[in-house]
Image (cartoon, rainbow, N blue to C red):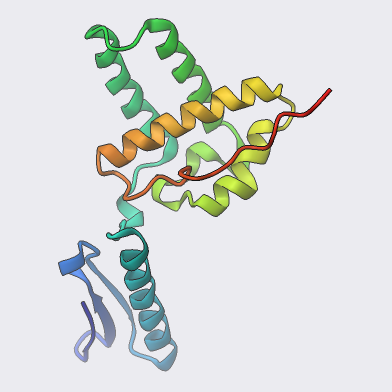
Length: 173
């Protein structure tokens, strides 16, 4: 992994193919060098923390991955591994989750690799628990967790953004 200059193209190139992070170019300017160094550090940090780098621009959108996940669950229903009520529950919960408003977009419009643990804690969980009974929101969060575990198993993600995330305690009364 290194940063090199391409004088012909007037670009800095961050080469990280050995880490499955590909190449990214930046302008051959002092500001471009700072951006290249920041990108380089970002790759290094993610590899140190998670053991691998997730190329974000190749990651599927949340809504598209929900479809892929549900096709995998269809196969599990046909094999008798899960029941069709559980399948319907997953489909309903994930379809509703894809419609959650996160900032100016819906969750379905966000790439899986762009969903971070911080985003889950600060934006997704509050949106999930807003205007819903605690038990309903808890089961919808469980469906999200199941889908993210599947994404890690299928090597779409390196780590699940919902690992070690606690949901709000059940209100008393």
